[in-house]
Image (cartoon, rainbow, N blue to C red; front, side, top):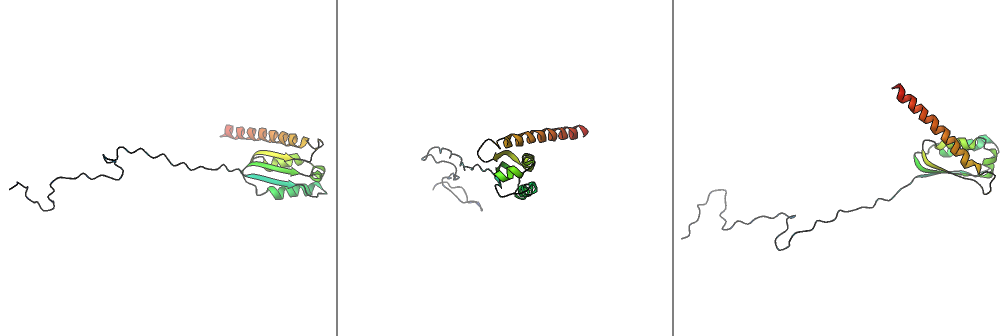
Length: 150
């Protein structure tokens, strides 16, 4: 007779032990498994653009100011602000460049001002830029004063 080991309770007699393979381990027949490339999910670029339309009919500066305020009072941080100015808004809008700069000073990364064709109102973009430069300089001074005080 062959010599078998005595059976111990809780153990099963196995003639030849079999190694258990996990699902991730390759077998010798399959060879080494190349790692799968990582999954790349493309993320689209999203830009928020706020548009203000001041091409309506206006008879006073207060109407232009009120319309600009109504259109921009709920605007949040955005990539670009586009303001379409009509002839009447430019004619009656006293200080319109400053109002546009004030409306989007801290919320827009860039501001575009669209005016009717011609060179008569081409100064508007330069005026908005000038007011923004003044506001940025004032803001920087205020922050420096706050930092120096603390």
